[in-house]
Image (cartoon, rainbow, N blue to C red; front, top):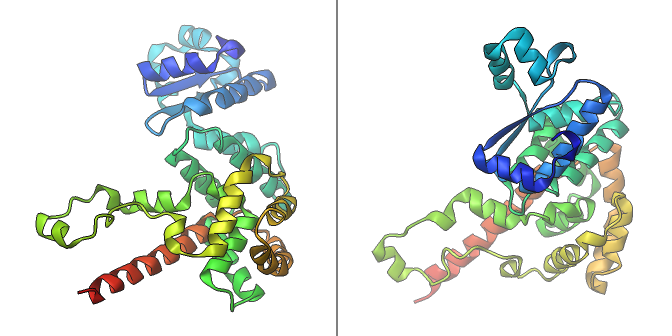
Amino acid sequence: MGTAINESQISRLLTLNPTLTLSFDGDSAGQKAAWRTLEVALPVLADDKELRFLTLPNNHDPDTFIKSQGSDAMREQIANAMPLSQYIFAYLSERYDMSLAEGKAKLMSQVRSLTTALPKGSSFRYLLNNDVYQKLGGKRSQNVEAKDALLDFDGDMTISQQLQLCFLFQPRALIDDPIDSIWQQSGINGLHLPAHIKQKASADTLRPLAWEDLQDVALLDIVSTIKRCLNYLPKDANAAAHFILSNVKPATQEMLSRNWGGFYKALTARNILGLDGLIEELVSQLLERNMKKKNTRADTEP
């Protein structure tokens, strides 16, 4: 179907086979067509589906390649087709200067924009972003740099205040709620407690935690405001932060406004592209603290 292919056709093909390999010409027009097809496919690309990309050598299309090289050679080409994650990075890295922090930031921004089109609750969205982080310098180094920047900026901030500033810097981290992601990764929602433990446990023992459970007014304010404003945020990180600040409660605004400028400068000075790892770590710490308090109360109750 070439460039005329649409979302419903891709969805149908993925129903027939969970792995779909797209083959386009290697010239500029062919690669643009491949990229457009990628964008069309993302909304129907569930975690159990896979999109791969094949550019045949010497300007062949599948028909001419099979006639020239045979079906076995074509099967080998298909088996070695490039996975979606590799294709995205390869395509974008040719269009931005990867020797510059600005080029890396533009690439990362486009990847984030692409991944928002994936189905709601997609694990691939989180994994693809992290994969690109690693290719741009490593999630670990980004996470360490971000933590160092926080310490250099203000070592006296609470975990909650650090997280609030992180959400200001990267509000789209709340598109897929971090609490939900961590809860699912932990496997707690899939636990089957023995009968004698169920009798002692409270009714909501295995209920997924929510931001309200943390009983942190300022954090709940910033999270709920960002979720409410996500579709209206400017692309520029600083402009988006000020948009959010104008919509939170005065008490929340006062603390964040006082710290935002220095925090933003500390991160940008280190060329930090994203805070996924740090956000996950901070949310995990808050959840762990909440669970410990909950268990302490349960132990002291008669």
